[in-house]
Image 1 (cartoon, helix red, strand yellow):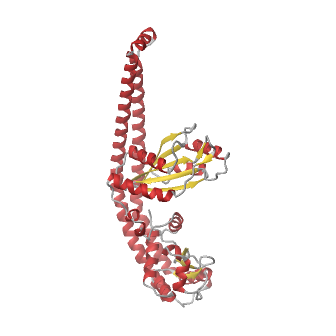
Image 2 (image 1 turned 90 degrees about the vertical axis):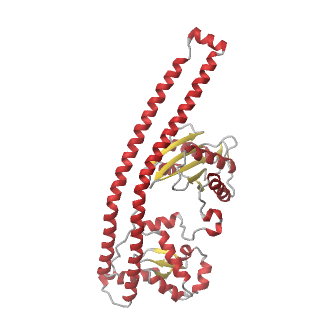
Image 3 (image 1 turned 180 degrees about the vertical axis):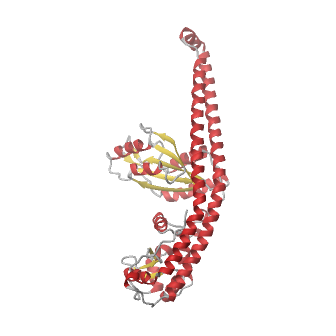
Length: 423
């Protein structure tokens, strides 16, 4: 499974994010260990309070564990993986919280440790944790026979279209797909020998090359959104400058005015019509997803309540088997009490395992239902992405042809309408 970790502070923000249902279809607080509180916010408040007795500002270590999408991984495997990671990173015995998320048919886990050792009032060091997590991730793929991504097998084969959180959020704000943005710009870079050739190739795809304030070279899309060219290419600014030189380029502000001047009402209407078609196509699936999510949440709540009732009834029955009073004292003397108690504990453990298996079966069944719906979403998104790419190319061709055409001042001030790839 893919492992991503980070040291961080602001525990209350993290707790709110981990328990947020807006972005996830299901959220479950699976474990709280080593905290007095019984909720995530209270637990992270404890960690923060203890950290104030130290000089450590990043008092938490947060880890996400993402198995392959198609695998059905029970909590026990997540727990064993977390225990191994805990040992390798030097976090043994530290207070921790485990939360499960489900989104778009995928299930993953988050584990957060307090780095502060309460006995020594020092923070556990996290040196080279990224390298260690990569090794552990590779081992988990081999152990479970999962298909290993090329980037984990060999870091040199990592997908250059992978994106950071900031890049994803920027693209999402504009309704684009960061994978397509990176791929398009990298294709333009590969086919261009100099700055002029790169500029032409970018314009054919609806992008404009400009001069940034600090980032050197930037690219703007037809909405005027600014992207760092070196970041999108996965290169250093020095490497980009070596090919493009220090020739004059228009500023971001000048380029945005140029785009605004060329975006005529006709092409804006074309963009808006395409966006409307996308929204209509996704509305039906979105409604089906909402109904399925509510149904699954209700089904799990009733299932959990039924299991709690069964557990309480069985506990009462087990307690009734233990003799009390003088008879209980005699059984303690003869050892029969210990035997009965051991039988009760063994039965309770079997019940816990059985209930865990029944709950996992329910989750797997619901995930299979959600996977069928997700396949329709993927098909829709693929079609949208194809149309979006073609539309951006059309915009690029139109903007090239409209170069030099005069526009009225009022028209040049209008911002382009957004075309979003719905998710």
